[in-house]
Length: 219
Image 1 (tube, one colour):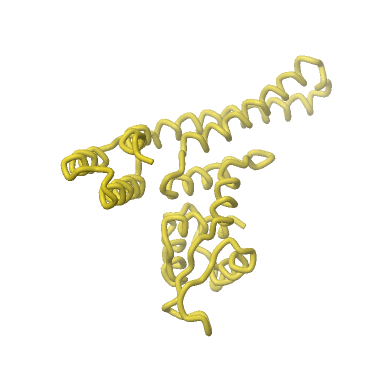
Image 2 (tube, helix red, strand yellow):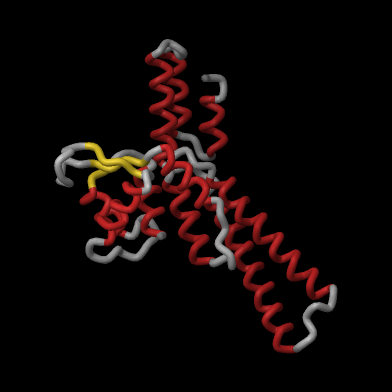
């Protein structure tokens, strides 16, 4: 299933042909091991059958001119998955979700991280309460419980470190912001001088808040 969501994350930034998608996943930039032969094709077919992606191009058969795009249902599915913490919380799965969230333009990665952090904090509280209530009597169970608390704590620490690392905006976020500014200029909401000023600010923005501020007064 992770290949499915990796494809949705890549397609969230625009339509792509199957060959390009295969090369992108094989490069490792999506945070996944290179998919096996035919895996991307099978995943795309299932996503299309589920209504999460659609194909544009030659209608008769799949071909090099056909591109795949994410649908509204696919965007909702991706957004929900990014914020759903695995149970039990897997550090490997969380790393993948944060990596993919960083690649989806317009995604508030801080919000994604905090959703997972809240889930893990609540899990830790439950384990601590069990120990306080004397629910762990045997040494073997006590050791297992201590190991789980240590694991949850390490994952939370990693999320905190990740939150600091993703405080900067990506090039994809800057491109999206500049595209929106140009759209507002095209319909007369910005003067040429205002557009130039905001484009310069967008290209040098360091945080998501910087970009949001440039669009906050626009519909």
